[in-house]
Image 1 (cartoon, rainbow, N blue to C red):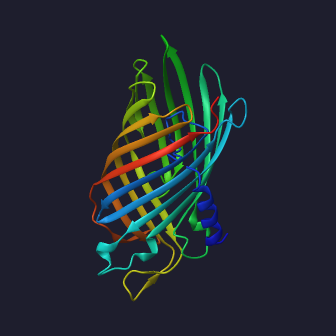
Image 2 (cartoon, rainbow, N blue to C red):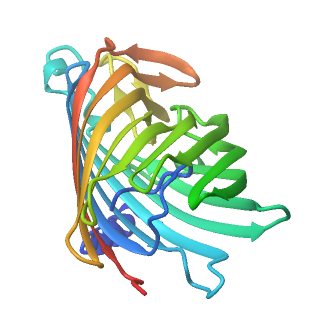
Image 3 (cartoon, helix red, strand yellow):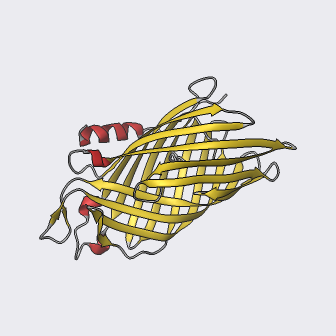
Length: 299
């Protein structure tokens, strides 16, 4: 598949709208089309601008056992502060195109099995696409749910594989979620923890801590030191994001979301043949995020 074909598909999707699909998501927002814009003003003197579109068709069957969707994220990186000494132009634009499928099955004693299969392309698309541009991510969760005096709780136990923490690896998935009352719910776990409060029928706020990451492949030559061309290099970014979000429900179909956060414990580097060839000075950064979504299966 050529670069032009990928970009055509991406911009076709961009006429729709997203919050971005995360395999460890704890929300119950399904069947949506959404658009998201996010900016990191300064991570190691590098500015990130992220634009994402997500289409999620979870309830394609009456039983809602199978779901599928697609996500495209375009990331623009500004390396202006480094241009005097280094050439990072090969990583100024990153593309992430993901297709995901989910399967849910009821087990016994209120246990459920939740499977997610999400292969994706993560690349600069500067040259021909190779196998190194693709990552096969997946997760398995066992979920126990119960109800006490009308307040729901659940526990999740599972594992996943993907670039959740930068370079692809296996990671555990464990969390406990409980509704304190009709307005307040909290979740404690790994990799996401947070508190969620419903102000009224239209407004909700949340406070969360979760990982942020990027792992992208560059097939073309990287002229880092002018005298040594490097092919098949990788960009890796990982951080912990602590954020406060606000969601407003305009009606039963439309909603918007605003989030302000802080990225800490951030690491940004370039790799070649599993060796770090450039390590940016790590520092924290603010993050600003805004999104709008449309429920395409409102019943």
